[in-house]
Length: 283
Image: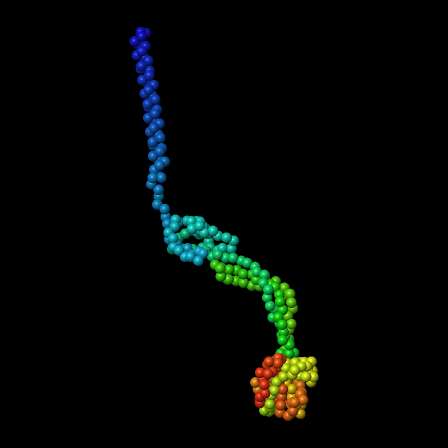
């Protein structure tokens, strides 16, 4: 082969290689452009996001929102509302949101408090047929002291339910002792008498300073001193302005139509003073 023919074959071979390379490159670019268009097309035209209008009440605030359709749990996450131990949500977290829905978040807490309490004194009734129906306190009780646990449920800061339990007595209460009896069924005899007052102290009672009366009763309100010749000892009476009482004591200055009514304190006795009263005597 001549030199010219060899040169011509070489040129033709290079041209064929360049053509094949051009064809391959064009085919690859066509595939890439096709795939790229297909991949980017959805992003360039996203579907519309469906929204619903809801009303949300939480932490003392009520607000209306247009939010993407989803669940109540998603709404709380969107609103950055974090639930803790006892909190309640209505409707439930997995409920799908609907247009016009009302969502309520309630903050609920529970606590137990140790507290000191007074224990009221119990009442002890001592029946006495000589007494009228009106009771007479012969010993004033004193409250005791104890501790107990108070359990409290709160909803949005307000107490919703509470109760106490586990009472432990530290100091026992002293009972209140009350003497009472039956009210006579028939009317009594009426006398108008001069009434003075005394108290169980030595300044008032003298030899009765022990606090006991002539018939052994404790000198307190509801016991009066009488002249036994006018009102026999043990008789039930009703003194105007004073109340029901029993003739349970005597006095050196109490003669005839006079009585001396007892008060537990000197101050009360002085406030009573001296007055004329109607006394109903029950035989």
